[in-house]
Image (cartoon, rainbow, N blue to C red; front, side, top):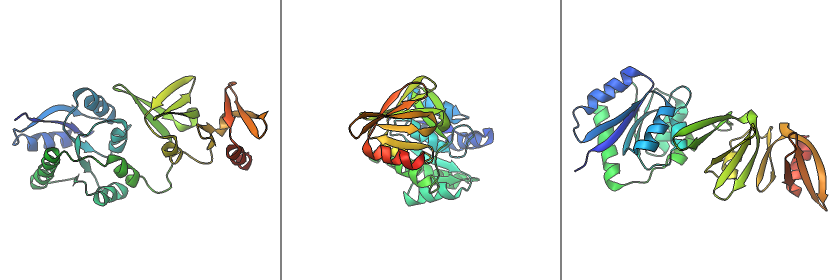
Length: 246
């Protein structure tokens, strides 16, 4: 039987060493990478495609939930956390195992056994739902994360010009560049500040700070002209929303 390939993701060296020590008694587990931040974790998952991850939730720069948002993988995750209200609530709501720091070897072994059972059953992860539950109600995002290969781009929300729907993807326009992200326009709209971003058309979300003027395009149809000259079609409902905000 091939060993289970695992990665350890935690910004604290001591925490990683404890997990490494506990795993030493499990020859069926092979540690293929140790990561001290979320960027390293995304790269490791993308390139190594491990089966299992021990993932710290509270990390600087890129937290554990943001790592999960960026990866497209069916790996099994054992979450590690210091107490944090929304994170723990999300784990309990979705019956996902987590280790609350500091944890004993016995508790670690329990979590590992459950993880191995999930690997055998090939259970589908519910990470999208976990991330949604873990986000405080009404909280908007200040940045949007995009993965291109093993690279991660962090785009400040205020730097976004507009977002365009493109089939199963969205195209985020910022600083003269286009970043493609596999996500529905409606899902991202729900995370953005409604005082700054408005759905002007079924295909476009506009940062109103980028709007220069509105022009009549045809009967009951208008065009948004951005400060850089970009033209976006505006629907009737989009025009009504803009009038309320301007």
